[in-house]
Length: 329
Image (cartoon, rainbow, N blue to C red; front, side, top):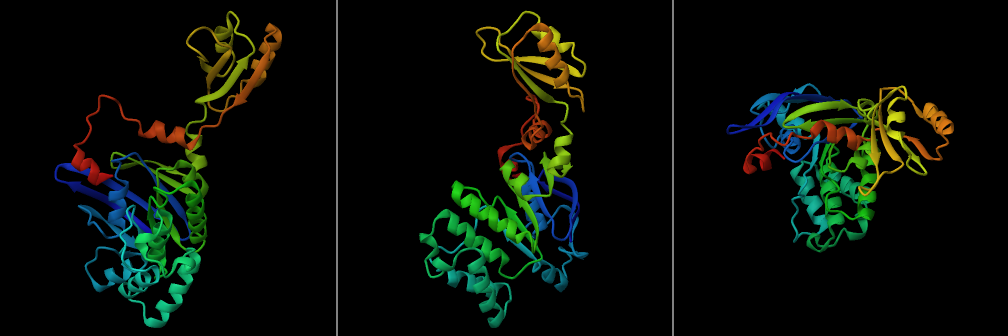
């Protein structure tokens, strides 16, 4: 459906995005994750045509977004974009603003009237259609921005931090709307909220320092960290030789004591070999040593674990200058 081919963007001597390539299939919901300055927003601005790449190209259905021909304008009409900071006219009423957006998108009067009614209902704006935008809450303004993005019924919808600044109730409403939109549109979603990605996205792209460092479904990415801190065990009381005994259990790489710094604890976190499950052996060990076992659980690596592992920078690495980093965010 939409493809990025070797996208690179430089700001002076600073490279914000370096040779990024990926593709979205029809009907996919794909999430973009990355720390501040990773190049997410710069990539999104290139994909939506707001920022030309220093090199590389973007195609939608095989047509070039930056072709410079009348066809390039038609390609952009197949895109809907909700930026992180929604640009609205606060003095206009909701219905008035959306009618204005419809004219900008080239909709005729009949299509405009029909689509206006549809998006007002779909984005839950019918009750405030005559209200001045400047008097709306943040959540409602976000819905107005989303309504404007889908007004011309684009094939591909790109959302940059769609739930930023919303309260929990508003976040739930926007998530439900995004899930519904994913049934009809191809979606690219950029967010810092990891549970949002797990709930909505079938595939994830993790950015760091202007490059894609990992790609796959949330389950596939978690598989990369299977075998890290995988088992937690707690005994009623600490006993002499507990750590050494746990270290000798087959499949256990390292044992880390958990608990207060004031003294020994009966709680431990175990790093294990990929695929290993030492719990039966630990249970038998507890029986043999008469240790009262309180907890013995296997932990699955979370998407947060994957994200932190792949994007944690070494302390000694230089940080790009603030202006460049801001542009690359």
